[in-house]
Structures are given as C-alpha cells and as structure tokens.
Image (cartoon, rainbow, N blue to C red; front, side, top):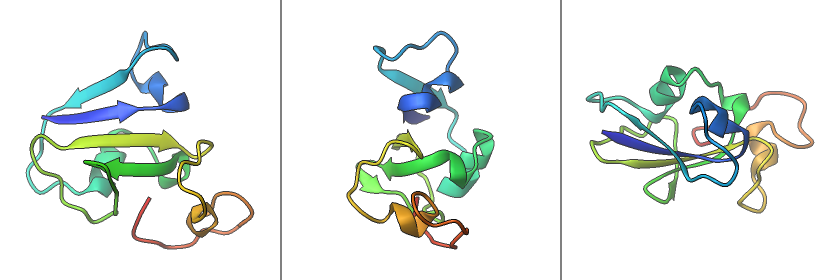
Length: 102
C-alpha cells in the first residue's frame, strides 16, 4: 500500500475532504512503479504539482516506489522550499523546463 498525503487544492482527489482534515489517500502498491507513473495514475500532471516528497525526501520523477512509502503532494501554488520553483516552470518562468524532480 502507498500512503499519499494531499494538501491544498489536491485534497479534492478525495471526496468529502475539507481543509481541516488530514487528507490521506491509500493506493495499492504496484511493483516497480516510479513517482512519475504514480502521478499519471492519479491523473495529475507536473504542472499541477509544487513540492512533492517520498518519505520526507524531495521526490524525483524516476524514483521507484516501495511498498509502504509515504508520499506528500503539494499543489503548484503552495511553495514550501525557498527557491527552485522557477526551475520547475512555476513562478516567473513561462516555458517548460525538463527536470528530474518535482
């Protein structure tokens, strides 16, 4: 099982959740699934996301998930880490930039 903690507007992925709830989505673990594939499975795009974490570490697109991982997903409009958002196409950048992290 993969535990996904959703923040901000991403909470709408779980019906009935509210801003005061701890919104957690549990998904079946798929062997050899990457973080990028998980994002696709959730029907999200990189443009939907801000900072994302796997077990408290900044997520990379090609990170292979393991059973029991805890994922934290923050939307593009919630900047947690100072700096770097411009490298992901958020903020002042108007063009997509290919990076290996979210």
